[in-house]
Amino acid sequence: MPRLLRPRPPVHRLRQVTAAALVCLALVLALRPPPPATGVAAGPPTVPVTVAAADLPAGTVLTPADLAVVPLPAGTAPAGVAAAPDGLDGRVLAAPVRAGEPVTDVRVVGPGLWSAVPEGLVAAPVRLADLAVATLLRAGDRVDVLATTAGGDGGGGGPPAVEVVAGDALVVTAGPAGDDPGGSGDGGLLVLAVPTATAQQLAAAGTAGSLTVTLGRP
Image (spheres, rainbow, N blue to C red):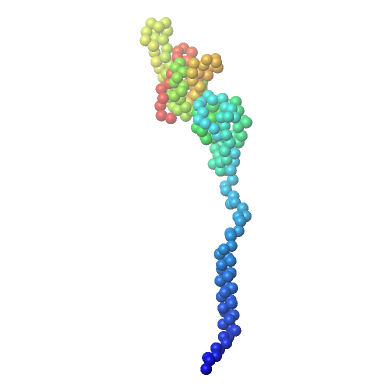
């Protein structure tokens, strides 16, 4: 005698349909591509800063080819920096700069440079007898200035006399060294930060004899 199957209750059928629907929904969600990005997260604000495009020695007359503009995070740019190269075109570097280094007002000859002179001191120009010595000096160096004069009564009757006329003087800027073929007069020229009385002694010593320097720790 054939066995009769008992019909399943509707609740059981509903559960099967619901389970199948959930499986299909999960597959659809898994295979769906991610939504496109609506935007890029904004980074910290930046400011334009003019930097050296290559290593530049002291005495370089700046041109647009020597400079570049890069963005730096706001708040990290040094004071006195130029936002565009236009204001630096034709200015003379008072100290060497490395490629990528911001060119600030104290790096070029001008009022900003003189602000590097400590309070109570004056900026005294000094021309060295040995022009090659200037190539060894950088802004921030400390030097002793030596004056050499003829011995005896000044007629060359004795050995030269050497004396220190400025000790531990701060180098504010070192001009380009060389034999100055163009006659610009910049060869071997230093600007030192010294007391007023020392500046007077340097001027007198430079007139009476020749000057050179020895280097100390900056």
